[in-house]
Image (tube, rainbow, N blue to C red; front, side):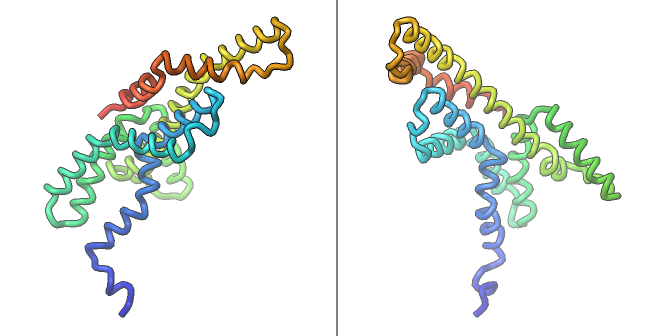
Length: 215
């Protein structure tokens, strides 16, 4: 018995979706930005291994599920209403995600990828594809990724600046006191942790990241 006979035609789309799920998670959800910002926070605090990578991925995944839940709900509703046709169901599931990506991508980035698509089509001597699906895959999806990376690095910069100032203050104080043999990290690390807790840093960061998305 061949392998193809063991896999029904209805299971093929499910297998394809499962194979593309990691790419979809990174490129079309809030996961990448959340993971980058939390990782940057570790280095800003001076604790590059705390929380561990597994915890960072878990936090980013849980928050991504929260951010994407309205999109998932709309996709599930569209899937139920699309009927038995596979292509109709795929379009119904993809539409809420395409809307989310389009609304959260900067128009500047979308214009860049639209121009690159037109130039690539011109070099190939073929007309540039247009339409919702073509725009979603070749324009807004990469524009969303670029927007997420830009915003993640900007958020990381804003997080690092206060802790950098604290490091400079501690280092200058120790230098002025003549404590050359004492590492500034020994003093600044507990102060940074205390400052982060007193500012309710986790709440501020999570709220700022999650509330920044448009549906």
